[in-house]
Length: 103
Image 1 (cartoon, rainbow, N blue to C red):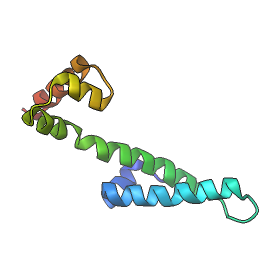
Image 2 (tube, helix red, strand yellow; image 1 turned 120 degrees about the vertical axis):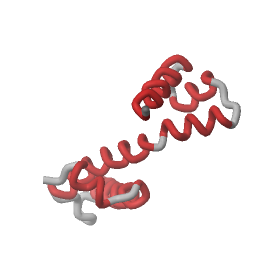
Image 3 (tube, rainbow, N blue to C red; image 1 turned 90 degrees about the horizontal axis):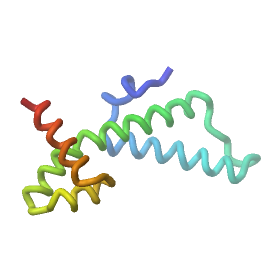
């Protein structure tokens, strides 16, 4: 079985995204032309699902350092909250938890 834990060390964010996009495109083409383009196998479907989790995880790893960079560049917590799709309070609290976990 393919799991995110198996795939994560094998991929960077770029390679995981590229493989996910390849599988997603094949899946979409097969849905549009079921008699011409072969669909994904069960294993490929599971790989695509696991890769989506890998992409989410890898993208998330950089979120708090990017917030630190935005703050250093003068962004307000309201602006940061808007950029991450949350309130300024939620963005600040998440960042504080990250800072506390670093210590």
